[in-house]
Length: 234
Ligand SMILES: C[S@@+](CC[C@H](N)C(=O)[O-])C[C@H]1O[C@@H](n2cnc3c(N)ncnc32)[C@H](O)[C@@H]1O
Image 1: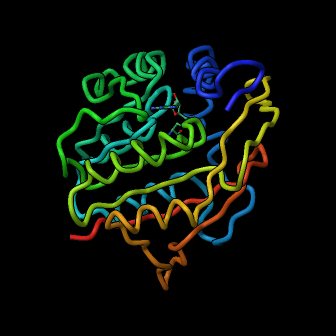
Image 2 (image 1 turned 60 degrees about the vertical axis):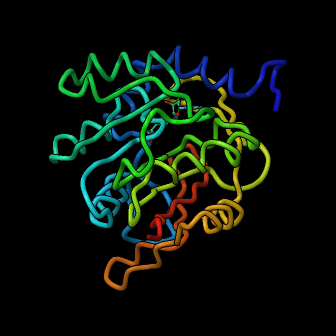
Image 3 (image 1 turned 180 degrees about the vertical axis):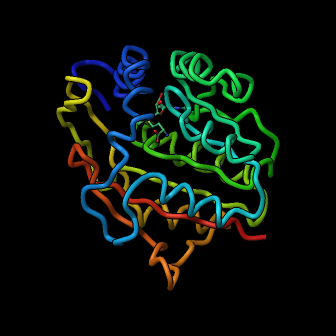
Protein backbone atom coordinates (compact mmCIF):
# COMPACT_ATOMS: atom_id res chain seq x y z
CA UNK A 1 0.00 0.00 0.00
CA UNK A 2 1.60 3.26 -1.04
CA UNK A 3 0.57 6.85 -0.63
CA UNK A 4 2.58 9.88 -1.73
CA UNK A 5 5.35 7.45 -2.67
CA UNK A 6 5.79 6.13 0.90
CA UNK A 7 4.63 2.86 2.41
CA UNK A 8 1.47 3.59 4.44
CA UNK A 9 2.89 2.16 7.66
CA UNK A 10 5.83 4.58 7.41
CA UNK A 11 3.57 7.60 6.95
CA UNK A 12 1.53 6.66 10.04
CA UNK A 13 4.65 6.06 12.15
CA UNK A 14 5.85 9.52 11.07
CA UNK A 15 2.52 11.00 12.14
CA UNK A 16 2.70 9.41 15.61
CA UNK A 17 6.36 10.40 16.05
CA UNK A 18 5.62 14.02 15.17
CA UNK A 19 2.36 14.23 17.07
CA UNK A 20 3.13 12.14 20.17
CA UNK A 21 2.57 14.94 22.69
CA UNK A 22 -0.51 16.22 20.91
CA UNK A 23 -1.90 12.66 20.64
CA UNK A 24 -1.51 12.16 24.40
CA UNK A 25 -3.29 15.48 25.06
CA UNK A 26 -6.21 14.63 22.73
CA UNK A 27 -6.49 11.11 24.21
CA UNK A 28 -6.38 12.21 27.85
CA UNK A 29 -9.09 14.80 27.18
CA UNK A 30 -11.18 12.01 25.54
CA UNK A 31 -11.63 14.44 22.66
CA UNK A 32 -11.90 11.77 19.96
CA UNK A 33 -13.18 9.11 22.37
CA UNK A 34 -16.83 10.16 22.52
CA UNK A 35 -18.94 8.53 19.86
CA UNK A 36 -21.12 10.64 17.59
CA UNK A 37 -23.38 7.86 16.32
CA UNK A 38 -23.60 4.35 17.76
CA UNK A 39 -25.44 1.13 16.91
CA UNK A 40 -26.04 0.50 20.64
CA UNK A 41 -27.49 3.38 22.68
CA UNK A 42 -25.38 2.55 25.75
CA UNK A 43 -22.16 2.56 23.69
CA UNK A 44 -21.26 6.21 24.10
CA UNK A 45 -17.47 6.36 24.49
CA UNK A 46 -14.18 4.51 25.01
CA UNK A 47 -14.72 4.23 28.77
CA UNK A 48 -17.94 2.24 28.30
CA UNK A 49 -15.94 -0.27 26.24
CA UNK A 50 -13.10 -0.40 28.73
CA UNK A 51 -15.47 -1.12 31.62
CA UNK A 52 -17.25 -3.78 29.57
CA UNK A 53 -13.92 -5.46 28.79
CA UNK A 54 -12.86 -5.32 32.44
CA UNK A 55 -16.13 -6.91 33.47
CA UNK A 56 -15.82 -9.74 30.91
CA UNK A 57 -12.18 -10.63 31.60
CA UNK A 58 -11.53 -13.64 33.87
CA UNK A 59 -8.68 -11.92 35.74
CA UNK A 60 -6.82 -8.62 35.89
CA UNK A 61 -3.64 -8.94 33.83
CA UNK A 62 -3.95 -6.85 30.68
CA UNK A 63 -2.07 -5.82 27.57
CA UNK A 64 -2.91 -2.76 25.50
CA UNK A 65 -1.47 -3.63 22.08
CA UNK A 66 -0.75 -0.31 20.34
CA UNK A 67 -1.40 1.68 23.53
CA UNK A 68 -0.76 5.06 21.91
CA UNK A 69 1.18 8.10 23.09
CA UNK A 70 0.58 8.55 26.81
CA UNK A 71 -0.79 5.00 27.29
CA UNK A 72 -4.01 6.43 28.71
CA UNK A 73 -5.82 3.09 29.05
CA UNK A 74 -2.82 1.30 30.58
CA UNK A 75 -2.73 4.01 33.25
CA UNK A 76 -6.50 3.81 33.81
CA UNK A 77 -6.36 0.03 34.27
CA UNK A 78 -3.32 0.25 36.54
CA UNK A 79 -5.10 2.86 38.72
CA UNK A 80 -8.03 0.45 38.97
CA UNK A 81 -5.66 -2.16 40.41
CA UNK A 82 -4.92 -4.10 37.22
CA UNK A 83 -1.57 -5.65 36.40
CA UNK A 84 -1.57 -3.60 33.19
CA UNK A 85 1.00 -3.45 30.38
CA UNK A 86 1.19 -1.66 27.05
CA UNK A 87 3.25 -1.77 23.90
CA UNK A 88 3.50 0.56 20.94
CA UNK A 89 5.72 0.56 17.86
CA UNK A 90 6.61 4.25 18.19
CA UNK A 91 9.31 5.09 20.76
CA UNK A 92 7.96 8.63 21.20
CA UNK A 93 4.56 7.22 22.25
CA UNK A 94 6.22 5.25 25.03
CA UNK A 95 8.47 8.12 26.05
CA UNK A 96 5.46 10.43 26.48
CA UNK A 97 3.65 7.72 28.49
CA UNK A 98 6.63 7.42 30.84
CA UNK A 99 6.81 11.18 31.29
CA UNK A 100 3.08 11.59 31.93
CA UNK A 101 2.72 8.50 34.11
CA UNK A 102 6.05 7.59 35.74
CA UNK A 103 4.18 5.07 37.93
CA UNK A 104 3.77 2.79 34.90
CA UNK A 105 7.14 3.53 33.25
CA UNK A 106 8.28 -0.10 33.47
CA UNK A 107 4.92 -1.39 32.20
CA UNK A 108 5.04 0.27 28.78
CA UNK A 109 7.49 -0.74 26.09
CA UNK A 110 8.26 -0.48 22.42
CA UNK A 111 7.09 -3.49 20.39
CA UNK A 112 5.89 -3.82 16.82
CA UNK A 113 2.69 -5.81 16.25
CA UNK A 114 4.05 -6.87 12.86
CA UNK A 115 6.46 -9.08 14.80
CA UNK A 116 6.03 -11.75 17.50
CA UNK A 117 5.15 -10.20 20.87
CA UNK A 118 7.69 -10.40 23.71
CA UNK A 119 5.31 -12.27 26.05
CA UNK A 120 4.78 -15.93 26.92
CA UNK A 121 1.74 -17.86 25.67
CA UNK A 122 -1.36 -17.28 27.80
CA UNK A 123 0.04 -14.24 29.64
CA UNK A 124 -3.05 -12.03 29.75
CA UNK A 125 -6.70 -12.08 30.84
CA UNK A 126 -7.48 -9.11 28.63
CA UNK A 127 -5.90 -7.82 25.41
CA UNK A 128 -7.04 -4.50 23.98
CA UNK A 129 -6.23 -3.58 20.38
CA UNK A 130 -7.97 -0.31 19.65
CA UNK A 131 -7.54 1.64 16.40
CA UNK A 132 -4.26 -0.07 15.51
CA UNK A 133 -5.06 -2.58 12.73
CA UNK A 134 -5.75 0.45 10.53
CA UNK A 135 -1.97 1.02 10.42
CA UNK A 136 -0.85 -2.53 9.73
CA UNK A 137 -0.87 -4.00 6.21
CA UNK A 138 -3.20 -6.88 5.55
CA UNK A 139 -0.56 -9.55 5.15
CA UNK A 140 0.95 -8.83 8.59
CA UNK A 141 -2.45 -8.47 10.27
CA UNK A 142 -3.44 -12.01 9.30
CA UNK A 143 -0.04 -13.69 9.46
CA UNK A 144 1.33 -12.14 12.66
CA UNK A 145 -0.73 -9.53 14.52
CA UNK A 146 -4.01 -11.38 15.07
CA UNK A 147 -2.38 -14.78 15.77
CA UNK A 148 -0.07 -13.13 18.30
CA UNK A 149 -2.93 -11.37 20.10
CA UNK A 150 -4.63 -14.77 20.47
CA UNK A 151 -1.42 -16.53 21.56
CA UNK A 152 -0.73 -14.17 24.47
CA UNK A 153 -4.30 -14.52 25.81
CA UNK A 154 -4.94 -17.20 28.43
CA UNK A 155 -7.90 -19.52 27.87
CA UNK A 156 -11.18 -17.72 28.70
CA UNK A 157 -9.33 -14.44 28.17
CA UNK A 158 -10.95 -11.52 26.36
CA UNK A 159 -9.80 -9.72 23.23
CA UNK A 160 -11.27 -6.29 22.51
CA UNK A 161 -10.76 -5.39 18.86
CA UNK A 162 -11.70 -1.98 17.53
CA UNK A 163 -10.89 -0.90 14.00
CA UNK A 164 -12.03 1.31 11.15
CA UNK A 165 -14.14 -0.98 9.04
CA UNK A 166 -14.83 -1.32 5.36
CA UNK A 167 -12.63 -1.98 2.37
CA UNK A 168 -9.66 -0.11 0.96
CA UNK A 169 -8.21 3.07 2.46
CA UNK A 170 -9.93 5.99 4.16
CA UNK A 171 -8.24 9.40 3.93
CA UNK A 172 -9.62 12.33 5.92
CA UNK A 173 -8.61 15.67 7.37
CA UNK A 174 -8.14 15.49 11.13
CA UNK A 175 -8.77 18.94 12.59
CA UNK A 176 -7.28 18.01 15.99
CA UNK A 177 -3.90 17.62 14.26
CA UNK A 178 -4.30 19.89 11.23
CA UNK A 179 -3.32 17.14 8.76
CA UNK A 180 -4.70 14.56 6.40
CA UNK A 181 -4.52 11.00 7.72
CA UNK A 182 -4.98 7.66 5.96
CA UNK A 183 -6.23 4.41 7.43
CA UNK A 184 -6.45 0.85 6.16
CA UNK A 185 -9.96 -0.55 6.51
CA UNK A 186 -10.78 -4.12 7.57
CA UNK A 187 -13.87 -6.24 7.11
CA UNK A 188 -15.23 -7.30 10.51
CA UNK A 189 -16.71 -10.54 9.15
CA UNK A 190 -13.39 -11.58 7.67
CA UNK A 191 -11.58 -10.75 10.92
CA UNK A 192 -14.14 -12.66 12.98
CA UNK A 193 -14.02 -15.71 10.67
CA UNK A 194 -10.23 -15.74 10.94
CA UNK A 195 -10.29 -15.51 14.74
CA UNK A 196 -13.06 -18.11 15.05
CA UNK A 197 -10.80 -20.61 13.31
CA UNK A 198 -8.24 -19.87 16.03
CA UNK A 199 -10.52 -20.68 18.93
CA UNK A 200 -12.05 -17.28 19.60
CA UNK A 201 -15.78 -16.80 20.06
CA UNK A 202 -17.75 -13.58 19.70
CA UNK A 203 -19.42 -12.32 22.90
CA UNK A 204 -23.08 -11.89 22.07
CA UNK A 205 -25.27 -8.93 23.16
CA UNK A 206 -26.05 -8.66 26.83
CA UNK A 207 -29.77 -8.26 27.69
CA UNK A 208 -29.38 -5.38 30.12
CA UNK A 209 -26.77 -3.18 28.38
CA UNK A 210 -27.28 -4.28 24.76
CA UNK A 211 -23.47 -4.41 24.44
CA UNK A 212 -22.10 -7.31 22.42
CA UNK A 213 -21.85 -8.74 18.93
CA UNK A 214 -20.57 -6.36 16.26
CA UNK A 215 -20.97 -2.81 17.60
CA UNK A 216 -20.58 0.19 15.35
CA UNK A 217 -19.88 3.83 16.04
CA UNK A 218 -18.71 6.98 14.31
CA UNK A 219 -15.95 9.04 15.87
CA UNK A 220 -15.83 12.87 15.87
CA UNK A 221 -13.88 12.85 12.58
CA UNK A 222 -16.71 10.88 10.94
CA UNK A 223 -14.76 7.64 10.65
CA UNK A 224 -16.84 4.47 11.06
CA UNK A 225 -15.55 1.88 13.51
CA UNK A 226 -16.50 -1.65 14.42
CA UNK A 227 -15.72 -3.04 17.88
CA UNK A 228 -16.33 -6.42 19.45
CA UNK A 229 -15.22 -8.66 22.27
CA UNK A 230 -14.13 -12.25 21.80
CA UNK A 231 -13.39 -14.96 24.36
CA UNK A 232 -10.63 -17.51 23.91
CA UNK A 233 -12.09 -20.97 24.25
CA UNK A 234 -10.50 -23.36 26.71
C1 LIG B 1 -4.94 5.63 16.71
S1 LIG B 1 -3.63 5.20 17.80
C2 LIG B 1 -4.53 4.25 19.00
C3 LIG B 1 -3.89 4.29 20.34
C4 LIG B 1 -4.70 3.61 21.43
N1 LIG B 1 -4.90 2.22 21.18
C5 LIG B 1 -6.02 4.32 21.58
O1 LIG B 1 -7.07 3.70 21.40
O2 LIG B 1 -6.01 5.51 21.90
C6 LIG B 1 -2.75 3.97 16.93
C7 LIG B 1 -1.48 3.54 17.65
O3 LIG B 1 -1.02 2.34 17.04
C8 LIG B 1 0.39 2.37 17.02
N2 LIG B 1 0.86 1.46 15.99
C9 LIG B 1 0.76 1.58 14.65
N3 LIG B 1 1.33 0.52 14.04
C10 LIG B 1 1.78 -0.29 15.04
C11 LIG B 1 2.46 -1.53 15.05
N4 LIG B 1 2.81 -2.15 13.91
N5 LIG B 1 2.77 -2.09 16.24
C12 LIG B 1 2.45 -1.45 17.40
N6 LIG B 1 1.82 -0.26 17.44
C13 LIG B 1 1.48 0.31 16.27
C14 LIG B 1 0.71 3.82 16.72
O4 LIG B 1 2.04 4.14 17.07
C15 LIG B 1 -0.34 4.53 17.56
O5 LIG B 1 0.16 4.82 18.84
